[in-house]
Amino acid sequence: MTPAPACWQPGYDIDYWDESSLGCSGLNPVVQAASAQLLADGDEPLLVLHGDLPLLTAADISAVLRCQRQLAGLVIACDLAGTGTNLLAFTRDSVPQFRFGVDSCAMTSGISAQHWCAGASSATIGYRTGCG
Image 1 (cartoon, rainbow, N blue to C red):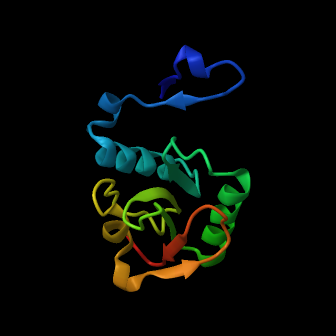
Image 2 (cartoon, helix red, strand yellow):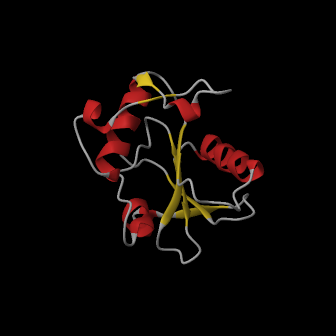
């Protein structure tokens, strides 16, 4: 890990990896490699979410993490259209194959095996156990 950019430093203890240090490029491979590295270090559960979710609240994130703990599987928050993926929560036993892009929610969740968990106010949350 390298030190975080100066704009992130004040008040935060943040580190990051350059794409080049992960040996890959592009959103999906980079998130996959970074997740593998974090999980190898024992950091779990992991929460991957887009930074442009202005309606997401602390209560929503708490509900996602609570749902992930209760169900011990992959939690997926789809976009309002139900096709894109805005958020994923998982542990080493439920790491998804990242597929951000067109129809990512269905591609990530394996729609036939999907179940639903209630608890967040601004997103529909789904989970699938035993993914890998």
